[in-house]
Image 1 (cartoon, one colour):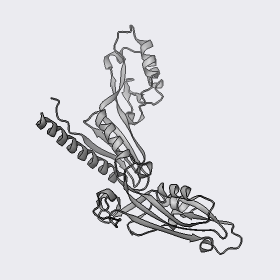
Image 2 (cartoon, helix red, strand yellow):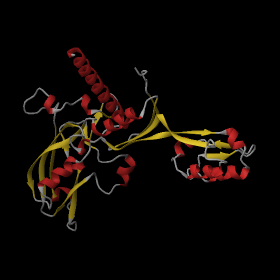
Image 3 (cartoon, helix red, strand yellow):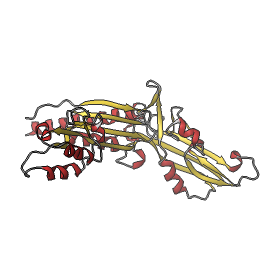
Image 4 (spheres, helix red, strand yellow):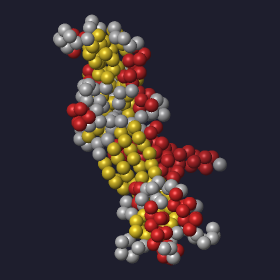
Length: 321
């Protein structure tokens, strides 16, 4: 039976919308499972039902409904003082005990705008309806119109643009949002980016490198486009760059050059660069609906729930046998 593993997570950098962390002491199967959980299994809020009462704009009701569904919605967690996991406050309608919908499973947004509400300038030809015009029934749920205050200050619109109104046009609708996961539809996806890369393991064959001339060592250093090596000014020996783990891109240039320097093909490599099998660097970028730390925590909770369920199912099979 394989040895138990105890994965570790170390945060490298964190901001309100981007998280970088190292996952270690595990393998690629767990890393890829976490990546897929981040993308497809984290519950978020998104508009799912739209009732259009009056629409005299240039867009059909179906176009507006689709645009509304793709607006990221965020839930402000008062206990954490940041945008957090909405599954702590809401439940999916199919898991709710109500019959026709309640504030625990649905959030209602209303939008009622006409051209004259936006401007009284007689020279204005069109005005924009944006996500800022949506009025929420829950004060803690709002559209994630901007990723940062800087983006909001530099924006030309008040939010995510939905449609433009010409003089005399108006739009009245009601939209209802619920919990869901992006494996059902992409509008519930909490991340714009969720990727990982392998941390490089670089091994220097010091005895073999010492037999090379200084010119050959310089060629080895210069042939690396990612600049993971450097020459010691005092000893002339090849050393690893301080940030080689961030720079390494596993190019073949170094491999081909040192093959040409070997006395025979069977000789050991001077420098070996390979992917680590147990260390991975993740980058998670939120769409604005949740803090990336909360997205990662939610993904790990979902993974734990699925593993517990799988363990129970396997135990039931064994008992049956």
